[in-house]
Structures are given as structure tokens and as C-alpha cells.
Amino acid sequence: MTPDLIYGVTGIAVFGIGLVGALCAQERLRRVLALKLCSVGAGFLLVVGAWREPPDTPDPVPHALVITGIVVMVSATAVALALIRRLQTLEAEDDA
Amino acid sequence: MTPDLDPMILAIFLPLFGAIAAFMLPRAAALIGLVTLAMTTGAVFWLAQRVLASGAVIVPLGGWGAPLGIDLRADGLSVAMLLLTSAVGFLVSVAALDSLKGADQARQRQYFWPLWLLLLTGMNGVYLSTDIFNLYVMIEVIALAAVGLTVLSGTKAALRAGLEYMYASILGALLFLMGVGFVYMQAGRLDFAGLIAAEPSAAMSAALALMIVGLLLKTALFPLHFWLPAAHANATAPASALLSGLVVKAALYIFLRLTTYMPLPDEILITLIGALGAGAVLWGGLQALRAERLKLLVAWSTVVQIGLIFIAFARAGQVGLAESWKAAALLILAHGVAKAAMFLAAGRIKDEIGHDRIRDLDRAPVRPTLAQFTFALAAISLIGLPPSLGFIGKWSLMEGAMAAGYWHWVAITMIGTFMSVAYFSRVLSAFLRFDRVRAPVGEHQGWALADAAPLTLALTAIGLGLMAAPILRFIEIGYPFGAAL
Image (cartoon, chains in turn yellow, green):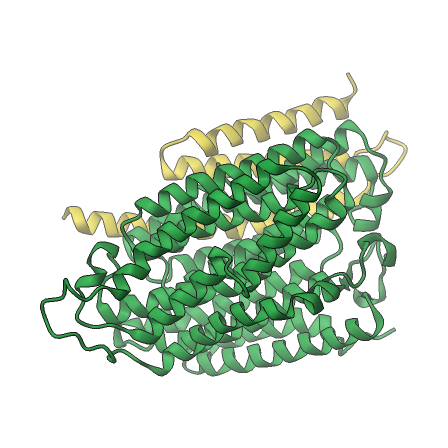
């Protein structure tokens, strides 16, 4: 087992856990968190793709991709949370 | 090289700056929106002229070419999609001026324009991108803007549907991103030329599978369509028209592109995609027959049409792929125009009558005749009656399937057509029945200038069928896609 294989498999596993959560979870917040896990898994995999045997320097392109992915996911999470809050406010008004 | 005023760059950055301006100056948002759309449409026409004159064109952004930099490329298919987007988008915007004019809709007016211009940025970006990471970013931009448009009305149903759409959209994009990661590890580059050059391997197939599943989720192919009907039915009319007519097409377009660069490894997979399309046609048709609301019926008809497009893609198996994409592209264009018209007409009918319960449509004393006529014209194109563009699309689907001896696709298409006649008749017969109205019927009430835009769209959907041959010649410019890269 080389380190990149271990990390690669871990990335895929994290993505898988997130996938199951996103499809099966009931609570709204849990599903957002599951989607975050998915994005962490995908990012993990890209970082592993950048890894090179030590004397060589890592490939910078996947790092750039991961940073872009993180930015995208931050904004997506913000939108999802805003939607959930709004929905909760509306539902609370109905109950009151 | 300084590509400072290239139409491709304009097509992406004009709407982006327009979106920012419309957000910062909410009072002038509508004006900014319309001017931006007119200018973007102008840029697209300029680009179309260039592609007609000299074939596919490429612009390396900032002078950095692929594989390190980002190229923009336009060929016949991408320009056809751009033209569809800006022309339909412009007419929907004109209709939005009227349908968002209510006093209680100030918030909707304020946010519609920035979101829609951002959506346009993302879609134009998709149609011009030549690398898969760029595509990932663009589909996320589209997803965020589209969710915003879905929840524009702020009702609880719209918010629930929007949230569901958001989950599906983000998950689809992340699956796509995972595929992008696999491709990079395997091929070391992300541009289309790299995809073509890559050796077929198990990892590349896994990458393709991940990307395709992500795209199918975003384009709502059965059984991944679960988010679509509620999202499209609960949005406000112009938003529904944009979501149904244009947004789902972006993921479809990426699917068509990817499968030409990375051929599907197996005949069985193509049959599977066709079978999912058949499932969509049957299930969507059944649900449309059962739908109680007009907009929900129209939304289910979108599920059916998406299925039909995938059947067109699979119609002649692996050997026929070089031709089948054209049938799929024709159906994409036809559905884009006709469905936008139909959602706008449905919105107008709902506005005039005050509800959109199909069961009670024939009790309404108000008959918005022009909107009903528009609905009927759009239905003609969606059912696929001649001479509409929908007819040409379905015809080329069936012609290819017959030539390849795949009669099951012909049978499914015929069944789907009968079902679509049945569910649209539910609505059309309600428009024509007057015996259940107790009050005197105001037959010529409810005409408005707002009917002009949907009517133009519906007439275009019918009229484009007469121009099918030039359209086909146009989308072939630059094909096979790899050649000009």
C-alpha cells in the first residue's frame, strides 16, 4: 500500500459516506452536511492526485482546482442554509 | 494576441457585469436586464456570423492556450444553443416585465434580473467551454442562480421544491467533480483534446460514469427526475419558462459533448440510457395524465421530453451515434422554444383565471383566448405534429431507429406521442368547453400585450420546423468536434 493509494481510497470512502447521507438523511441540515462530506471527499481525491514521490514537487494544478471547489461549495452551503432558515421561519409562523 | 472584443468573451462577461449592475441598482434592474440581453443576443449573432463564415473558432483566454490555459470554442452546435438561450431568454424577459408587475412583487422584480443574468452567464459559459473543470464551475453557477429563481416567489412550496432542487443539483455537480478528479489523475489534463487523446481504461470509464450520473441528475432523466416537477411547477411563470426551457438543456448539452469525446464503452450502456428515457416517457406521461394543476402537467411533460431526447440519443445504438446526436439536438431546440412558450402561457392563464386547477378550467367565465391559443400551438410542437420543429425532431428519431432496425424505440416514441395527445387534450378540451360555465362567458377578455412574447415563441416553435434543413446544416459546422481542436 503506497500512501497515495491509502489517501485515495479514503477520499472515495468519504465521498461515499456523504453520498449515502445526501440520499438517505431526513433532516435538512444533515443533508447539507452530507453534501459537504461529498465535496471533502472529491477534494481529497484531487489533492492525492497532486502528490508526487518526495524529491519531486507536487503538481499545482489540482491544488488550484480544489481551491475553486472549496469556494464554490462555501457559496452553495451559504445558499442552502439561507433557504433552510427561511423555510424554518415560515413553518414556525404557521405553527404559532 | 489581444482578444479584447471577441463575441465569445462578450457573451460570457456582458451578462456577468449586467447581473452585478442589476443587483446594485435595483430600480433600474429591468432596464439593465433588457439592455444586457439585447447586447448579449447581438454578440451571439456576431459569433454566429463568424462561425458560418469560417467554421469553428477558438479563443485562448488571456493568450494562454490549452492544456494549461482555458480555451473558448464555438461551433455550430454551441452557437445553436447560444442562439436558443438568448432568443428564448429575451422573449421570456419581455414577458417577465408584465408578469412581475404586481404591487406585491417588488422583491421578485428586484431579484429576478440579477439571478437571470447570472444564469445566462453560466449557460453561455457552458456552451463555450472546452475543458471539464470549467464546465463544473459553470454548472455550479447555473445551479445557484436556478435555485434562486425557483424560490423567487418565496412561498413555502417553492422553498421546499427549491431546497430539494438544490440538493440534487449540488450532488450532481459533486459527482461530476469526482469524475473530473479521476480524469485528471488518469490523463493529466482536462481539456477536450486531452479527453480525446486519453487511452480508454477502467479509470476513465469510471470517470465517465460518475460525470454522466451527475449530469443525468441535473437534467432530470428518470428515475433521477424526482426534484423537477415540484421545482418547475412552483416557480413563478417566467422562472419556470427559463428553468424548463433552458436550464435542463445545459446538462444535456454537456452530456452530448462528453459522449462524443469519450465514447461510451459499451452498447449495453447506450441501451440502458435509452431504457431510462423510455421510463421517463411512460412514467412522466402517466403522471401528466394524473396531474391536477396545469403547471404541474407542463412540468411532467418536461420529464417526458427529456426522456425522448435520450431515446433520440440511443435510437441507433453505438454505430449510429455519429448521426443520433443531431436528432437529440433538434429535440433540445424544439423543446426549449415550445416549453418556454407553454410555461409562459400557463402562467398567463393562471393570472387571468386566478387558479390553474385543470378540473375547473372549463368553469371559468374568463377565457384568456390568446394565452390558450399559445398553449395549443406549443402543445402541437411538443406532441410533434407537422410542421413544427418537434415533429422534425421526432421524425429524425424514428427514421434513425427504423434504419437501424430498433423498432422498440419507435414503439416507445409512438406510445409517448399518444400519451402526450391525451394529457394535452385534458387541458385543450377544457379551453373549448363552455357548457359548464354558469356566468356569461367573456370570450375576449384577458388579452394583453403580455401574450405577445409567448405567442411569438409558440409560432417560432412551429415555424422553425420549416427551417429544419438549414438548422441541421448549421449544427454540423465544426463536426466532428475533435477535428478543429
